[in-house]
Image (cartoon, rainbow, N blue to C red; front, side):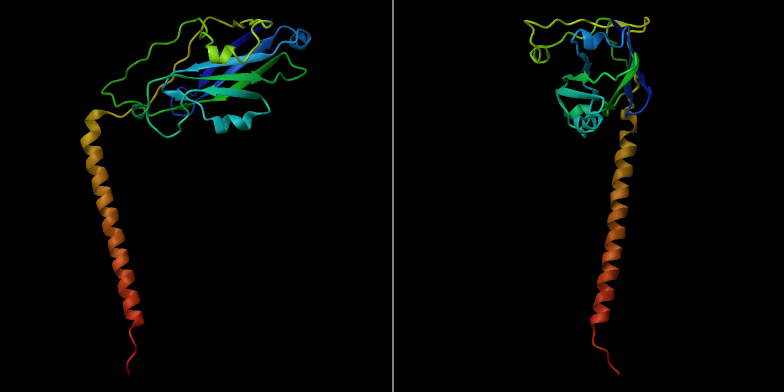
Amino acid sequence: MAKLLSSVSPKDGFHPTSTTKICLDDMELLSKSNCSLHLYYALPPLIFVDPYELAHHEDFYTFRHWGISNLELPISALPRISSSVLLDVKIPKNTAEFEVQLPLHLRYGDPAKASTKIPRSSSRPPRMPTEVSSLFDTSSASFIPISLIGTNYSESVSVPTGNPADLDYVEGGTTLTILLAFLVLFRATWRTADRIARSSRPKTD
């Protein structure tokens, strides 16, 4: 019926994109069978999506999001819970192959002295939780999983983290920067106040 191939790029940085290539055996098969195409993503705590950004992709899909969507906090300030996204893909006409792109974002990880690896997911797709399956009429609907192309069932990305050994330098540099900024502002304020005071004095011959 259909096959898919997913990849994540770039592998480094905080803003990768998940691209899923979908190949239909028959361009009209989904419309003939009254089927809809959905992509479900289970995301680890370090990876999240921006719902406001996804809203701009309405020409390609609609979505439902579960979990934390805070865009600013690092992983250390949030509970270690996963999030998930369900895409209702709008199938383009007159093509048997098309791509679906999901913009991703990475949080700042915990400081670490050395690189660590988070276990990769298995080849099995994530189990659909109740809040997702409840969106469908399970009494009359059936779920048909899409086969994967190739043998690469997992993707990995690198999350830049700080080194605890650099903490003293960072704190010292931050303190010095704030102090210098304060002195610059104080000097500018003092000179401005002095100039205003001199200009307001009455002129004498």
